[in-house]
Length: 99
Image 1 (cartoon, helix red, strand yellow):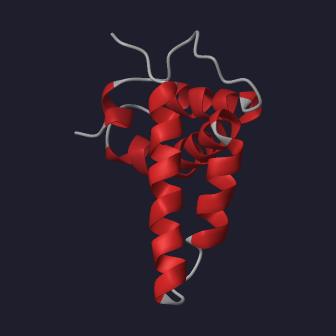
Image 2: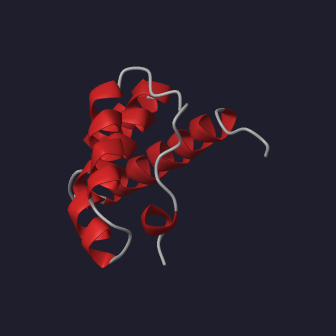
C-alpha cells in the first residue's frame, strides 16, 4: 500500500508557493475513495506537488538537477548530474524535521 492510499495530505502542511497544487491534491483525496483508483487519479498531482515543494525548498539545487540530469550525455555531464543530485539531497535534508 502506498503512502497516498493510507493517508490524505495533512491539513496544516506548509506549502508556500505550491498552494494551488496542494488544494487540488487535497480535493482529489476527498473525492476519490481509498484504493488503486485514488492512487491512479491523484498520482500526477502528488508528483507535481512534490516537484513544486522541492523547487521551493532548494531552488538552485533543483534547477541544477533539472538542467544536468535531463538527458544522458557525456561522462562529465553524468558526473555533474550525480553531484547535483547529491547537493539536492543535502539541501533537502536540512529541511527535514524530527518526528
